[in-house]
Image 1 (cartoon, one colour):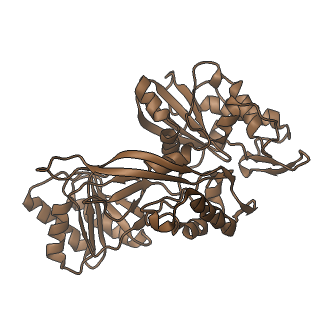
Image 2: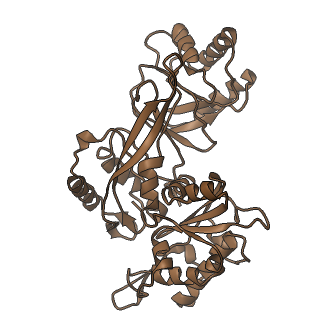
Image 3: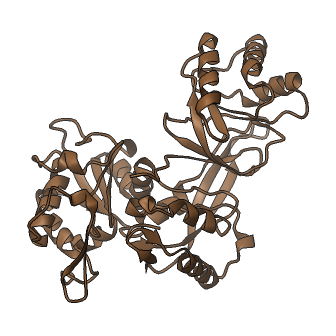
Length: 436
């Protein structure tokens, strides 16, 4: 559900065990198949600040019927709220209202980092970079934001976001302006939308290291990486997806969609971004929903431990213990207990697979601070089952314990954990942005 459009996609993910019969199971998603793509619908709004929750729900229900599926057939799902829509006052209520239609595993909303990754994968830009060895700067330009991803040899190394999109200015049927996004306040005063779109295109050029723009800093979304993402002098192939990308390759009347999207697309086509080689995604307006439907889920390791924890778990904030230093555990967990609202997961990225004595010592240290509380732990090293068993032995059969491994949780991220698939758990690592 984006600033401009809402779409639904149904996919089939095939899971297989890639280990031999005599080894620890190694569960992985082996294939992804798109079964149904809905038409592109305008996101239903009550006004500029409120999404129409009832119409949105009816829209999704009608698309279920068109796809020939029922809620009971859906094993796992995601509601992705993107762009300016994620700032709508009732975005959280909308995701709650739709969550029961998307399976037991729900991503509430996509922050700029996750949205950039989903679009880069769903558009085909990651595959293109991997197949050609070229460095791409992918720009997914929607209604309210342009989500950026720097891709080197098929690996997304950096992400960023600009408040640049086709719905920053909207028109009435007679062509007069009825809405200007607050992000343009103090930047654009003339009312000339052609001039505005040229300035926005220059801002995108500056984000790719192709010149400078006085608007670059002002339009960079708060909390995201500074731009440009590529190193000074590093050549990149510009890559595009999103609704505005359709207006780069095609010519539409300037007011075709009631916004500046067609004019912005034309100005990008005429800019330095498209003077040399560039890549237009194999999926443009559908890039993010394809990415969400096929690339958002991962699997944990197979040697995991779960006792008395009701799944799925949604929107777990992440608390980091950065290195294998048990003297730091007390302050970190004490602070977390004071500041965290609701359940949270402790990430232990510095802990490597140790011997039995060290697992026991770690379990005892954790219990000093977590006894009587849910113990939700995520490790990168393959040791979750051993640690979970050590905790259960000491805490008793009534303790709430979840230990997963082979999952990396960046700082500032959130985690969803779904019901098990074989011996592994499906997980999504994401960022959440509901504020401005």
